[in-house]
Length: 276
Image 1 (cartoon, one colour):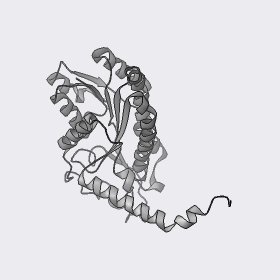
Image 2 (tube, helix red, strand yellow):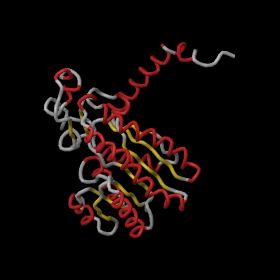
Image 3 (cartoon, rainbow, N blue to C red):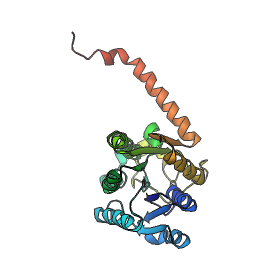
Image 4 (cartoon, helix red, strand yellow):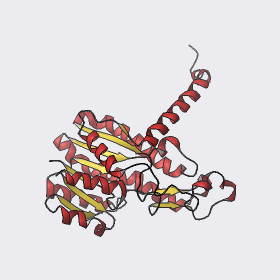
């Protein structure tokens, strides 16, 4: 029986992950900034659930949650860094305080939880760390530059982490979901307060008042949860797990486009070494 610590379980993919883990009988530490949003999970599965308040931007809360998980279940086998939210703005529109909060939640929040669980995982020489990214890190849509940036940072950190902890019996993986039918494009989506008219035809089209995606996404959160569990339990978990047809298609399109550009500029790129 594995013990999972999942952040951001109140709604969306985090909720689906928690429900799937509990349904199969594993232990789960389910967290949300407002713990009342996850106490129903503990009520339904009292023997194998610990519901705790967790704001990943709070160092003390992160430390406390991991300590409580270790005291209740003996340790964290799988950490799922899911907590986060969307932010849309043209790069010029992005408000400094909002951008800092976005990075603190997604990037530094992930770093906090990873650092908190690693001592226990290293001691046991086992464990899995799952960091939620987004296909946005690959396709970088207009109006999502800051969100794409935090997710790209998560992926880079995860790849380095994976190489560092692999000799210790620990694995790290990034998950790139596409669009899933959750609250992400609704309640969980924030945006800049003052749009600039010159960006109306680019970033402006993806502002909440102009976006009709919410509630029509093709992705099924329950199927995403099943896929995640399968990947985690695989003998060779991937570094990058894409979730959804749109994620798979978008990744391949972006990759081929980048390779084409590398080929186009290869001669110039290779001409910058010292002459022998």
